[in-house]
Image (spheres, rainbow, N blue to C red):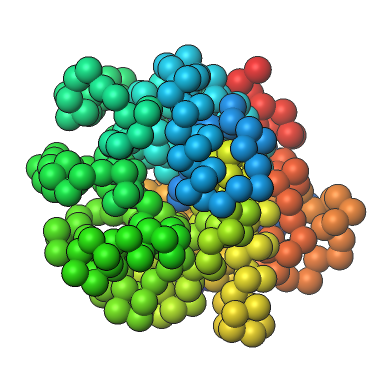
Length: 402
């Protein structure tokens, strides 16, 4: 997934100290003491990047089904989080998600939830890379706090330092769940601390219409633009209900956008304008959202769905299979500001690598690696997974978690 789209047949990758040190055909100059992973009859590619998820919500899989988003969120999910949410809930739920993500090829997740230091701890134990966004939220039963959320954030920033695979972030939930005063403080805090911002934006028509009614006709993207949010490092989750001006704003600011097709369709929202956003200059990545709204964390499922939805909207070929694979790798890394470290197999980059098995029935025959990954492969085909140079799954067996 480098700039040239290089594909190496029968190649080797050498790793040392967590990074790729050489890559090419028939290198064979490794140390006799080196561990050798046999990935013959596999497609080897960068580890997949889940650009938007709530890992702990794996424990709410199947809890609330076949409801529109606002009813699903306000009447069922928020009260459930108030009742069950705890440090233990987040740690166990994230561990379960790590198992599912590693098994299906994800090596990095951009997470948003409460008690996010527990998510960081679980990912460190699993050997997964995480951008952990501590959630800011007001105005629902689960939001009552006895201390300032900024005090919580300060403690989180200190606690997460002991987890090398975790990058702290700040996650204002959405316009409808935050006051303007708090949102302004969050953006100022993010700017001062140089933190990545992760936020739900323009997910439903109701959210857009409410914003326009309350803020002199401004859409959520336009309203957040008045705060200078798009000048920060930010990823906008969903972005399904956008105007042409919204797309232009996100594009010229090269904003990261997470497209989450499985969740959006299940909750009855719109289809994100992926082709238009990419054309405008935004960095569009792919996310699963949570297991409560999508029921699985297999990015290959969402990749297949994303490609077919864009074909439905624009006709075949306007969004190519290579576009799709790039969304899961280098474009996902760009959206998260990590493209200098991950997202492609290049010398000097972090060794986040997966191998997709080609010996299963659904993998035969193979004509094109990109179309195969988009339309034929599933998460169950991932044979090996390496994160930061550590083998976390080998021959379909997890090495880091029970």
